[in-house]
Image (tube, rainbow, N blue to C red):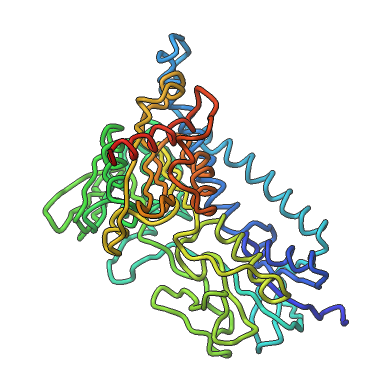
Length: 467
């Protein structure tokens, strides 16, 4: 085999491309990865998942300093937090993750190319490095995993360039810590940053054109999270669209006007209006690969495009745009190509973690979806302010909600709000995947006191309602 010939080439340096390439080499195949930037990790490591979750942890720590009296302790109160302090942990984690990623590529014998990858035809990819030198690689299969970028609606005349309005990728370039910020868009990214900012003392105004925040969630979870946000001092404006962005005369802020007549002045604005796939200048039009109106590549259940040997996965194909799912999709692609792929997983089988404060995690259908399908279901809820371990730790916000099929007893879905939600969902995911009955929680012993005990309480609540 030629030095420039591969079994699979992955275009992109994020989780999907990495896992596909590594899985291929584990199956005895020759894999290459093309990344346009000199560092690996993609948006996940450098401006998305890792930085935002590091900021969340810093924000949580800062909040807990101010809640130290819950434990009867007196600690020095930090009243001012600089932008440099806020970013410190994120910078440390990013550097470590980048090193780990590079080492994984080496250990798994993945050949990496730094440069712009462009598809010439279904078996050839051109790499152009920073100095303009070109190299053509030959391959049997191509995976497009180029990620996404913040959506900037062209028809709304949002003045991003003025240093006061940012999207989520540009957020880390804010020069000074604002005292107030407007977050436009209450999806996952907007909601996460709204709570992060609020818990470090920034006044937050959260806007969304829909009737509730995080509208794809179970309504009870969405509405409960909205209340926790309000309790944290976040002003929420749903069912509203921003019609004007006017720079204040002193140059130190923005005045926003909504279609309902609200007028709000803030220091900074974060636009979080969804994301679009990174598909420009990849050569997709040469192959006839289909792209939707969000520039997301259209694929089938096995992540194949209309060209059978060209695949796409990760954020470039859209929902749910989670690093964990991208990793799974990358591995799946390699297995589907080279043998051993499992049955395709539906969107409801993916666990979703939202790193707000408190966090949200979910697996399976919502209550509204079960109603629409005509399922004879039951509901059990346990609120964390009734859980002993939560009372001890002070993490009393939130709930566990279990949905189950009454005739078969199988647990169908679990929805959690808690500071530990993204960890707690693992048990619910196992039970849903194994199609275990609701009685599993009531008939087995759990350590006490633990946050996991909320599952048992929720199950008892569900069974009591049947009697």
